[in-house]
Amino acid sequence: MKQPSPRGEISALVLTTVAGTVDDGQEALARLATLVAEALSETPDILYDDDLQLALFSLYELHYSGIDEAGDDWEWNPELLRVRQQIEAVFEQRVRGEVVLGALPGTTSEAVCAELFRMAGEDTGPSMSRFVATAASDEQLHEFLVHKSVYQLKEADPHTFAIPRLTGRSKAALVEIQVDEYGNGLPARMHSALFARTMRSLGMDHTYGAYLDATPAITLASNNLMSLFGLNRRLRGAIVGHLAAYEMTSSQPNRLYSRGFKRHGYGEEALEYFDEHVEADAVHEQIAGRDMAGGLVEEDPRLLQDVLFGAAAGLAIDTLMTSHIMGSWESGRSSLRTSEAMAS
Image 1 (cartoon, rainbow, N blue to C red):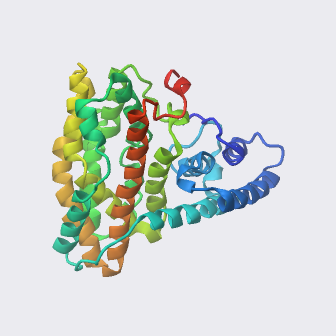
Image 2 (cartoon, helix red, strand yellow):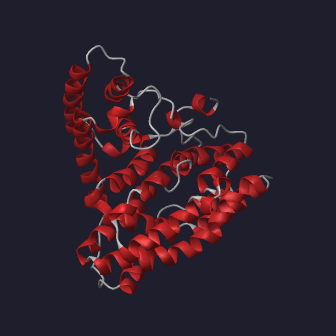
């Protein structure tokens, strides 16, 4: 990923440190830890803090495709990991404050699956899919793709971190889902490749991270949540619940997204990504609910609350992101940080 533009002193120091453009790396790391501690104590809301969310996103990116000019050794630098953990602790606490779980269900596969479907069905946030289907302008369709591109161009990767942390039935179910996400061995059928094709068909840059500078903090937070869950073994239940909720809330919205792009005259190349998910996720939701999430809880009942927390957290943060986007559009504003970034 190309190096993003800093959004404050912390993200600037993270990016210059990993790029090796600071005079003294150790001094920079010590300064970074101090700055992060101060910022975490002063930020009004970490979910909407551009500097801290970009810093966390950049630190996570070292575990994915990396950042241009950043050496591979930074991935496991102890001081940088401590800084990441500083931010993660406050981020996780804030997310937990957004989630309220009801009475816990039983620990059978069927009970877990039923509760996840109930949670997904009770999502009361604004419906971006219905708006896209019936009213979104062409410009808003482009903005919609910008928000989605942060995850969709590396689709499935955060959840794949969970594979070696699971066993038996839950592991086999996750692999079954991920094989489909990665195109069943065909690079052109990978869901990230299909999404890139959608972007190309709208004349957009499909390079991973191309529009990162345009995405607001809450969009980064939605993506950072997946990495938080996926990269911490203690949260393996949460990443499973997160994926289950995603699969259970995907099929019908993608049907509506496809309708919205078709309404603007876009053809099969633009629609294929959404149409693929209508069919695939209708199957995935059953595998994810019963075999992956339910299977995990049957194997280890202690993870029940973590699974439900992961699902609820994903739904809650995505609702906040959707509220930001829809609120901006309803007020006649762009939902992005900069109009210039859209022209890059």
